[in-house]
Image (cartoon, rainbow over all chains, first blue to last red; front, side, top):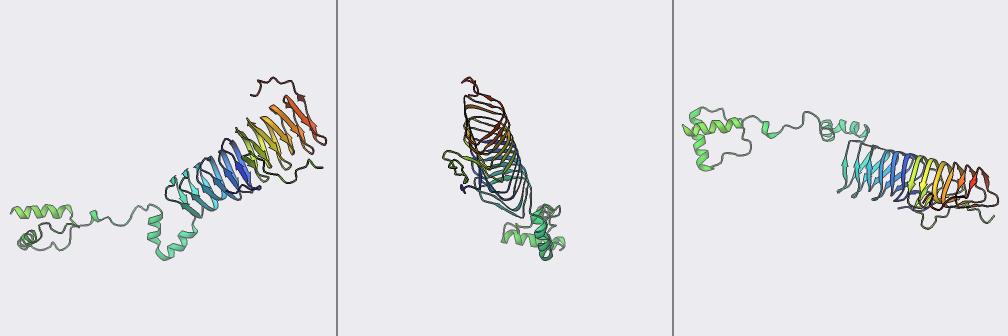
Length: 185
Length: 122
């Protein structure tokens, strides 16, 4: 990372508790607790632990962050990164291997844009909407079962001889029961 | 003057740097060298050296092994080894350390106590 002067580094054995404000990049290899407000980039390195309310422009998490992060540009949780808390940022990147628990809010702008195109898919994928896509198990019995009993028996026999397993995919409980009864008769 | 460090040179062995635009309000503690170019209010306790550079402003009680001040410090300083007040620094507060150096040009107001037992602060 940038170790040139003008950037701030919190070393591994350092603990800062309280509030930290600044207008420059900050690299955390130690611990920071409290509140952390920057107008530039916060980098939490693998040894770094931040337990704070974080407000920054960009945030790169390769260490541990516990607390809410608000970024005006982006938040990235790298492969080594672990975070518990809520993220509020227009761009959020979570890399494979990262661990995260909390809420993410990317703002309203994207949702409004997408709503014009396909409102339902976006909202259902984004937030857990109470009425999601219909599940196959709830589907009613297959429709072509309105024939009288005799015909149905023939059908069933034919089906049983030809293909021992009746169409397996959309079997509802009612259909199965009826089929068994017909075979006994 | 030759002693003035206008450009804050990154010191060897210093892992922690608090940059000039940083303001910390609270407590800093640790086991390594700390370079302060920004502002710290509250408390600093270290087992190693503290460097307060020209742009550094400290309003805090300090407890370390070594202190080198080129900036401003308001608060009491307790060092187990040495306190060095460089030219152009401003220090207001009491200093307690076995070795205290005050350079020509330094501004200081407060008590000095060099009668510190070696076990104190270690």
